Length: 199
Image (cartoon, rainbow, N blue to C red; front, side, top):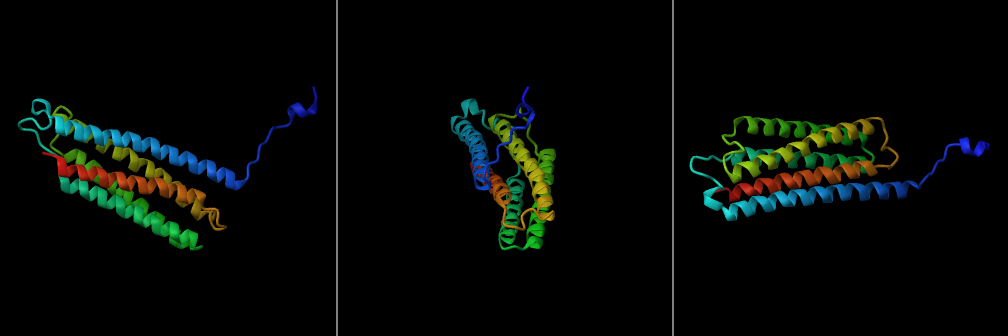
């Protein structure tokens, strides 16, 4: 047996190639999520327009509070703006601005999660309360999952920033987290817009 067979095989790609691959992967992930989210919106409006046997909102059925839905969306958008400021900070070499903006964004995401939990505990609807209730609860569940993913990403990107990983201009991961963060904010607003088409 030759010694070459025991040597580990290593393939090193240029940093710009790796960054391009990572960017493409995140964009495909967001695209897949967008298709799923679009299917939920289509289902919402399809069931709303169809309203078979008044199944959209049967007699005695209730709707969730539009105020809380929009409050969750507003807090999520505010968190995205905080991260946008953090991203601008790291691009200009201001680590402290990045860390504070990222931390503020994380706190706001946690606040949005708390509001979603409050909403779910207080809304007067159940899955069996018609088409509106079932699709609305699914959409809120997806929003909750989005926010949980953001918590993990925010902690991770803050930790990397605190370690000085982005101080030398290598902030591809900061940009990629931003892509997802802004997408989640957009879905929150689009989901809240359905409250205009409830009854």
